[in-house]
Image 1 (cartoon, rainbow, N blue to C red):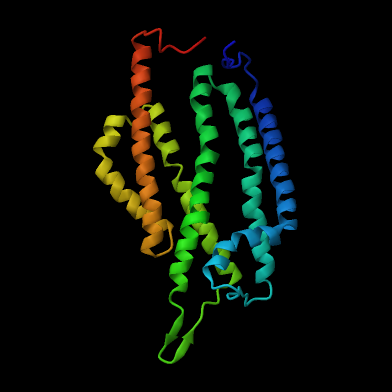
Image 2 (cartoon, rainbow, N blue to C red):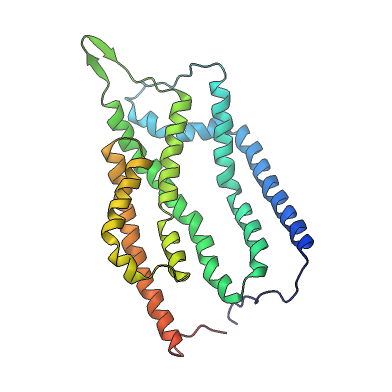
Length: 265
């Protein structure tokens, strides 16, 4: 038996009922975030130890250190780490609450169209964050630490601060994670009928320029990080064009009444 999604609810709940449900969904989302924050704050040292590994590997063995120049800096670094990690771990619950609130107001066709994007969003974000952590950050840190040495008889030594390092790591992860959501944005615009594949192909040259501009703004000011972000985005854009071709072709066959392409009831 094929998986079947029920159509829009027949009931018309009053506005007050919708507000009560919205409140309950928000409470559940905040509770999930609060629990995740408490757990992540308890393990903040371990999480920070994981985030600092690319920098540790970039230093020569047994060398390198992180410092903090304000007495409260180390504490607030742990708070930021807890908030940052708690959002990632609680996102499935938050997304589920959002879906549970809006799904009853959607037709079955709209649910089937929207659900894949809800699933693809965390997957693509994780792919971008993993690329930043395992490839881009080690490469960029080796480049930055290459400036250590001497200048004018003075020793140049990298002494990164904990707060600055965490901000840099968050910038890398968020820049790559959010940028990897480009296919989701394009496919949503395509499914909504706002952007067609023909229009996207015609705008390819502008998209390429825009990608390099975004890469230059979102990443630290070094060419390596910018290129390592721009190239995957270009590949994702071309892959999205191919996906648009398949979906538009399928929709055209369904519109013509091709029984082989019609969705199962």
